[in-house]
Length: 109
Image (cartoon, rainbow, N blue to C red):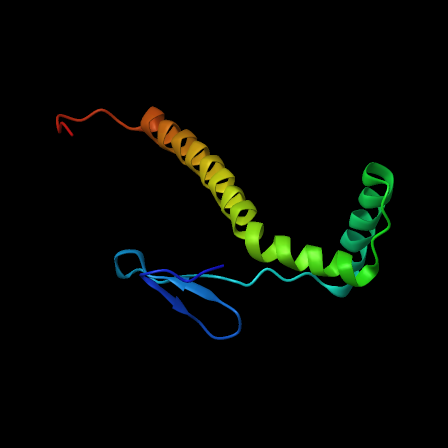
C-alpha cells in the first residue's frame, strides 16, 4: 500500500492517516500461522480444481501476501463501512427511542 500525502508510516507496521489532523492508524494485515496455512490450502485447491494447475506452498503464500498488501485495505475498508452502517442504524434506533420517551415542555428545539 503506497503512503500518500497526509499519511505517515507508523511503527510496528501501522499505517497512520492524518485527515484534518485526526490521526487514524490501520494495523498491517497479518494472519496467524494456522490461518495462513488454511488460506494457502484454499489457494492451492482453487488452482488445482478451477485452473488445472498445481501451485506450490511458497507460490501460494506469495500470492496471499500480494493480495493482502494490494487488496487487503479494500476489504478492511468495506468491513469498516459495513460496521459504520450498522452502528448508524443502531444510533438512529436509540435516538428514536429517546424521542419517544421525551416529556413535552414549552421549550422548542
